Image (cartoon, rainbow, N blue to C red; front, side, top):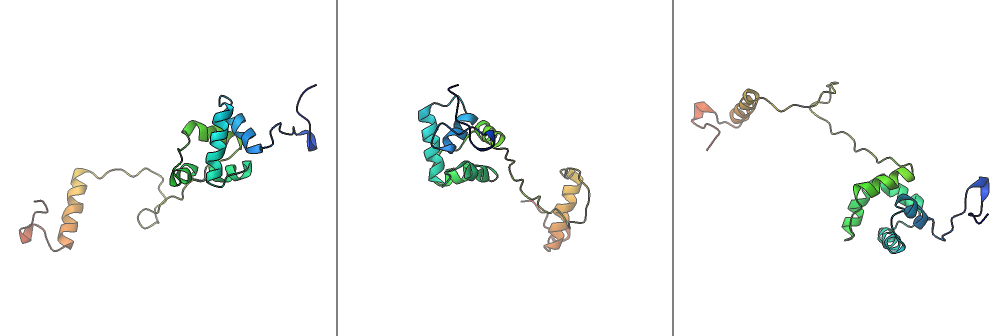
Length: 140
């Protein structure tokens, strides 16, 4: 036999005393023990001490938290591996409201044409009391 001991519901009991280390090792099997320990310490710096805390942090911007305390950020590959292992999806930022919010169109916003841009600039210039009539062309 020699396998891992089996716990409740047939789930293997980790060989390590630290479930966070086991998650890191599964996500990045090429990491050696020194790498794993260094990453665990990095996570401890931002109060991540369990797989659950790591999963929660992965829904937000974990790299920003790490950077804020002077730690090196994880690569996109590592974040993806951790998210996949822990079945975590990153929370999507809420879309910013555009215009008056009444448009139902899902089409991408396009850049204004040069003619539209001239109208915008002229309109803003007139609203500010400038314009061609006042001798101000809008450019200097």
